[in-house]
Image 1: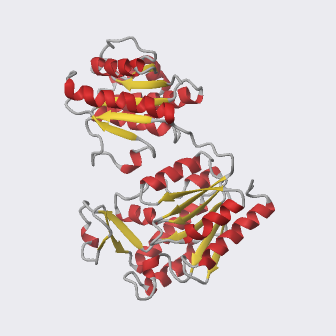
Image 2: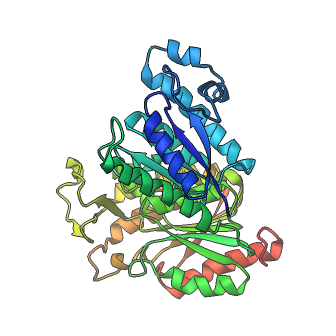
Length: 410
C-alpha cells in the first residue's frame, strides 16, 4: 500500500527540516513528491516540482515574484501556483496526501493548498502557529490537521524532530488508512445542532434511509458548516436539508463561530436541490474566550460550556438576517424550498423557555414572507421546528422531488 505524499516548503531556508520529513516518509515505506515554493534562494535538495513550475502555475514567474518587492505579494503568487498544482496532482492520481512546513508565511501558503484538495485527502501542516488565533476559521480546510513545529524555527534538534517525525508518520498513516467519501447510495447532507436543541434529525434519518439515501449530518458550529459547503460545491449531495443556519447569525455579528462568507452558497452554485429552514437563527454563539462586542455585552448570556456562550438576536437583527438568507438563496441555480416553522426555530424559544421571544419570531416570519423572492418556494408549517409535523413537511417536499425526478433515490 505505497502512498505518495506531496511535501511542500521553502527548500532554500528549510532544506534540512523538509529533507528530514521526506526521509521519514521514505523510511516508513511511503513515496515523496517534493515541491519547492521558495522565491529568492536556491534549493539545497533535489525537488520534483521547482519553484519556477509553481510560479508558472499561477500565471507568473519567479522573476515577477521577486521583482514585486513585497514578500506577501510574492508568496501569494507561489500560494496560487502551489494550490493549483496540488489540485492537479491529486486529480491525476499522483498524490495521496500532502504535508507542508512553515512559519506564518509558509502556513499562509499551505492553507491554500489544503483547501484545494477534496475532503478525505489527508492534509497536514507543521506550523509555528498551529491552532493559533492568527488563523481565521474560513482559511481551514474541513479535515485539515495541524501539528506545532516546536523548537524548530531554525535548524534541526531533538525537540523539532519529535514534531516532524510525528507529522510524517501521521500523514502517511492517514493516506494508508483513509476510506474516501464514496457512497454507493445518493447522499443527503443535513445541518443541525445537538439533539437537545434541534430534534428533526431524529425524525428524518430513518425515513431518509428507507428511501434509499445515506444521511450525513453536519454540526453547524463553524467547521461543520465549512465541511458541508465544501462537499455541496463538489456536487457530493443528491439534495441538502440545510435546516440550521446559526453560522450566518454568527457571521453577521462578528463571532468566530461562523463558517465564513460562503455559507449557504455551495449547493446553490452547484444547482443541488435545497430544503432550507431557519433553525437556530434566533441565537448568537460566541467563543467562550472571545471578547464580546460592546453592542452585545449587555445582553443576558448562557454559557453552554467553556467553549460557547450564547445570547439572542433582536427582532430587527432577525429581519436583517432573513434578508441575508433570502439574498443567498436567490442566487441558487437549483430548486429551493424554504420551510418556515411558525411555532419556533429551536428548543429553547418555546413558551416557558429562556429564549422565548414571540415578537422576535413574528418579525422573522414577517420578513421571510417579504424578503424571499419568487425563485424560492415558501412553505409555512404551523408547528415548531422540533415537532414531527415539521419533519413530515420536509419529507413531503423531498418525496415530490423524487416523484418528479428532480432527486433520485436508490
